[in-house]
Image (cartoon, rainbow, N blue to C red; front, side, top):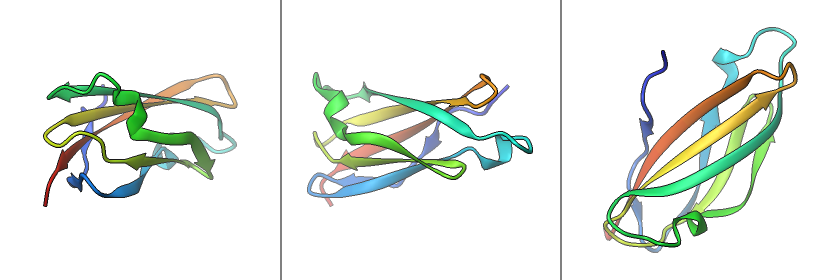
Length: 103
């Protein structure tokens, strides 16, 4: 069983950042990440357009998946769920929580 989502540092409503989903420890020798998908949902507060938090497509960089984000609604906590399909067909999932605040 995996741990729950990891909690990211808060982001200010005027900031943008890059989130890294690290899969290296979960890949065996010879395995790599072939494709990824990302889902975004508001889990606290309201943002009907939560998917707009993610800017562009997720980028595979070695054993990591990078996703650019831009803050949206103050007081909203977002859950980002990254689904990585390995070259072997096995699927790995990682999730992160990101809260938007006004610093």
